[in-house]
Image (cartoon, rainbow, N blue to C red; front, side):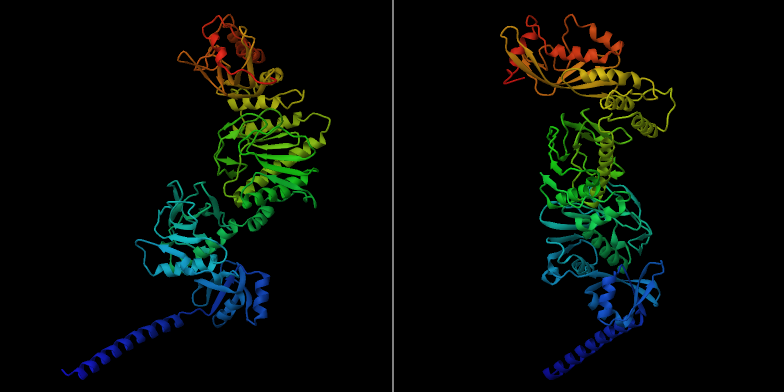
Length: 620
């Protein structure tokens, strides 16, 4: 065959192929044209958006979606003009009523969106259709460009993981969760989008929850570097998945911006709160991140300052104790107490909110008025003009944490207001005790008077008595009244810092205890003690040194006469403790327990070890 013929045949074949491809493309375009909707519905538009449409000469009318949501309706041919006027991108098209009405899901562009390259958004998958990645990239760029200063890494495979949470990237993961494997049925409607039935993970209380405001359903959680989306979007229809992705990301932008979510907190928690003072200084200290400072200052201003007449100082004490101040200001101390150490287990929920941080909390000191849950957990203490919050409570500076702080500050503010009304009188009244007794009853399902007194009730009796200010302490449960009277004496015992009931024992935390060595006349610093006095006279008192232990001849000692297990080597006081406990003379038992540490018999083999404790320096 001559070479000219080969060329002619090749050109003919190419022409046929091109014609075939062109015909196929033309057919696809015709199908798309024939399937076009007559009208588009747009929801979530504000008055400013409508003004922009009018200014651009776009014809539209107010209308409703089939679910009765209000919005606007534009004709199909007017959609490009409407998008240009709104500076928006259509990320998905949802069928609402056949060809009659579709919904245009919109993402509104940031003024700086053009400066961000979509290539900074990487989409990884091992098995998904490779054609999905470009549209995922376009959708995420339409929502986040100009609003997020990090590269975005997307993992489409379910159960994906982040190797490094803080690697300067923002990770989006589908069908996964930071921890837990619990699943539940996904609602049939999320973010105003109808969803096909499927299961998704549930909130793990690791990050900030991303919540659909309309239903309250948690679709995912947001940590500082990652967004975990519980459902596998890629099991949904094509338009559903991109519509849902758009709205989840738009909600994430709100959850990351205190200026936006605080407005929602004000609206949800602000009912009945008096207006804040127009001019009131709030000084902050110890908060490193701007988001944390914003949340703390805003919630204090909105929910606490209306109840105060003083300037406010707020400090992150970072787990250190802080002495109460009386300098004319009102002080809020996070993660602190007037004394003691953080050793209390925190509950899973606080004031109806999931508690993301599960750090150990400070316990009550008995110096002020406790703020507590019905479960008996004391989360804060009001000591004069000092509010001690026993944990930090901030992990992500999110809306969920702002809501928790709002409720806490309202509780504290009302207590401040109550105390101001009682100036010069008792800080705690009989009515307060009745309210607390009602809380106890509610937490144990309103019991009968003859039921045994629980550890929780005993703890409460002791804690409340310290602030009774000579009022008669009385609860309806047997045993608590006796402890309340006895506690007045306990509080007067020298060097007692706090008292609590745990596991049917009274636990005493002391100040620093000292002992003089009669051989040298030197005063030695023994330590601060946790003294446990059982309510059962058959059990033993224990002393555990919270400051130090010493080694003496291969023995570990908490005090000159106290062994490594906290057991005592008694002299002639051996029979006194069981007798005092049996008679419920706890104050006398505490006095004896402290005196036992601050005295020594150096003729005893154990007592000679007092010289191994450090010598006290300065005034004691």
